[in-house]
Image 1 (spheres, helix red, strand yellow):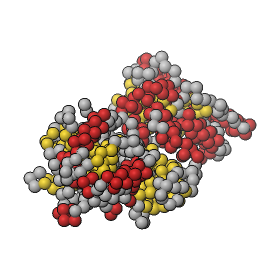
Image 2 (tube, rainbow, N blue to C red):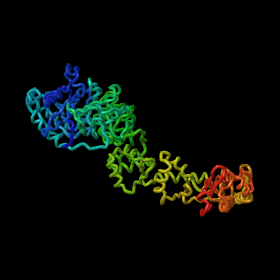
Image 3 (cartoon, rainbow, N blue to C red):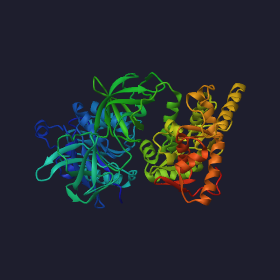
Image 4 (cartoon, one colour):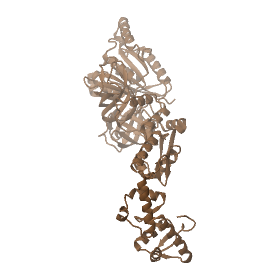
Length: 632
């Protein structure tokens, strides 16, 4: 079996959690001198439990004192099975209730209620403790959980507890798999002869010796030198295991609890987290923009709770909330979180993350709430479609994985199910995706409509200008590939590398028609020495007409000079005849043919060079490959 699960303790201070773990495992979880002197747990403690099948389950012993709840939260995020410890001589106490609330908010679903210190009470006191437990657990995930009465001193009940615990851990389902590896850091120390060591519960993926990893936030790069699980050296660690990671190439300074050891792609630190938030019945009303303490994984961050679609959350109710954090965190969709009030510091609620990012969500936009409700369902095809629709423009595969936080195989399956709803194309070595392109097409239509309005005499908008305005991050070849899939049936046409609405037609006014005829007449009358610059402008506002006529092929602009099409045709005819008789052509010979000056002869010859009608060789031209059989 490959399901590796974490057992955790919970309960009020001095109810015997550490003593219970010591009696079960023989391991002392209180490491600090201060803990031993004061007799209470301050920091997280770690042990392991041997299962009947030979496997070992990790154990996290959390502090029970209210002053150390944030330490408890740093370890509780990795718990799969909880031992809720209640002392028989005191019954349910305030931290019992707070820990129970935290466990529910973190989505823990399996546990055992352990009644400790039974050697200190008589039957009547034990029954009273049971009654307080019944009342406290009603309606919670532990309402019908097994209960075991235990004395860590006499050993009574320990064997029964071991068996019940083994049954629950063995029957628990495996953790879901992701494509990346993620381990929230809950402890950092330096070990003589080894260097920096971090510990935590591996939530996703696997880590091997020799792996290159990142510590985020902070983007600290390191190499995994050695791995240990429960004190034993291992070559690889898997999800659900408590792992000590010896890191090479990194100093202790700069590494702290709350960071995440990461390997893979599709994850980055964010300072905005949106999710379903439940406010505990015991908490006061939460108003939007309230300052809070955000706990997720092993991190604690200060931020503000911005309620979406409402102004406040009533006790015992839930809402969609975006948490705007003062420092970035590393979290993924589906992670559980706990919220504590800024002051006084108490647990007020928590929930599950729906999406992470850096963008502020508008509180009062209905589509914001609708999108989050859709993503809350977690259906991969719906997730993919919602992010593609929201983006409007195409997303690269990496961007989509980052937003939807799906494993690559989940994305592949989602795309298969979506079929033709999602269109893909290759650009700049990446695969890009968009949903039918309806919103992108709407943007393109609006852009072209505005262009036609501002340039009524232009046939279309240059494709490259469209690309830089619409999709600057996609290269020219990729944009051309996209248009091949996007334009059919879209009402948009492409001609001569220009885009236009199919309904667009160039329409000249009577005055413009008259000016056009006058312009063509002047150019034809001065075939090889046409007027330029100010002489043309003296005829009237010819600039927009020149662009139109060039597109229509009535004129040619060569070297910045304007020639009638007939000049090109006559020049081409001369070239064909000349090269039938002679192998070379000089600039002077072409100048003599047109009966004009070098000023006009040179740009015309350069035009013919570019068209492949001639080819320059030193100071002469020879026949080009396109001279024969191709119309000018």
